[in-house]
Image (cartoon, rainbow, N blue to C red; front, top):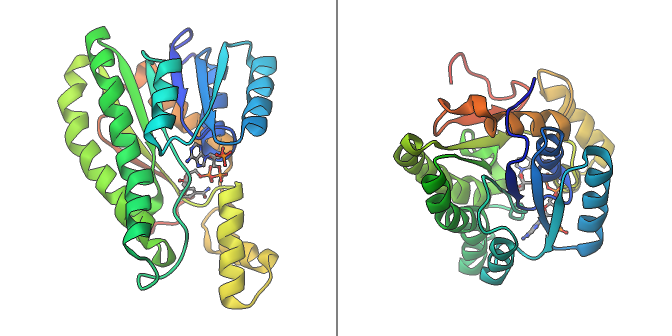
Length: 260
Ligand code: NAP
């Protein structure tokens, strides 16, 4: 399927690995030029090289912490007028509701709520004036069904979800489309860390923790970054113009419900 976005320009935050990289690759496959981001320059460089060699699009890298004002400034200086923005950052640490102090809460809200909101605020005016734009926020299945050990994520991403619900409906008439992608468990470094933490808590091996998580899912497995990236690229396509302010859950059916 031709997504109709060849030649567009995208900022993909936190995209040297994992889900962000998955979306970046599918955008590149659709002919989108990329600004990639991550904190570790070597990984970022390796990902950029891989994508350029495979898809022949223009790729620039910005090694910076997207959750800082300085990081966002660098990103926007490199690509001031993106057609597409993919918001993403690392997830907060696991723990219990009783573990986190005020500073932990500030960090989580900054990374998983304020950072995407501030980036949207920066790029939406240009998208509105050009009458076309796409924003996809990578959030989490935790906004729909809370994950007990990820209270920081449940709450901070819930705030972002509320912002998107209102804002997406205010900018859609200008051809600017904002949606959220909610990952369930996907095969990335992040899920490996969570499996390590589950294994330690339950006194089992990481392999046993993974096998148990696979068995719980209706598909019997974790999702792939390729599947996730393809859904993200579709939400950035010419065909997503009537999908507004939605929360697309990609969890292999783990959330058990008849509707919604
Ligand atoms: P990952 O495999 O650990 O990859 C994270 C990527 O983001 C890396 O490229 C990392 O590079 C970059 N990054 C992290 N913090 C950053 C920052 N502050 N500034 C710039 N780049 C940063 O994680 P993932 O699994 O793709 O997860 C992505 C997001 O989805 C996270 O917020 C995670 O909590 C959420 N999520 C994931 C799953 C899952 O199953 N994988 C499920 C639900 C939600 P550097 O470390 O070099 O910066």
